[in-house]
Length: 256
Ligand code: NI
Image: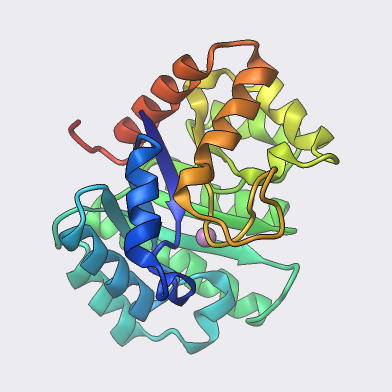
């Protein structure tokens, strides 16, 4: 039984063959999939899918790319949306200094504001951090985010940083790049972090693992990430699948 802790399966990229893809996900024994919102529209889509399909759960929030269009009225709408069934986190939120699609001061302002929202509604948060390690950790500490439950989605930092995060009580989510040839740094993270603190994800339709790298990603392929983690840890695949699934259920407070 597998839990894909981060995906965007509502994406328009599945509009042509959605039902077939969903059937494959089920057949691959992926029992749970968290669809992460990236703005108001996709947060509502994620909730919609959670209502229509048993395997889907939802998070609501605004991705750092899109915070340039965010406003207080939308934050209030998010606050209403978290009361819907199967919404289990605020996210994905954070900082992205690689693309800088929104100005950094705005990214920081709305990151803080969405952590505060998570405090208001008592929900864990899903963090996107790209090339912003220092500021992400600083803001999370300043906003007392570790009291909420913090999931570092698609972790790409060092083993040292990962250790720092788990000391603070955060969880680390491993995505498809762990299967890539140049995954040395990420493999060190998996080696350094006890499996009790690890989750696995696809971030579909992006970041497709080997052997499908370059193609569209889907939650079915979370098994390749699980296989790689099992190989690195020297543990049976079934054990990794079970433990990472239990970790995700506990993090998102889902009753199995
Ligand atoms: Ni994502």
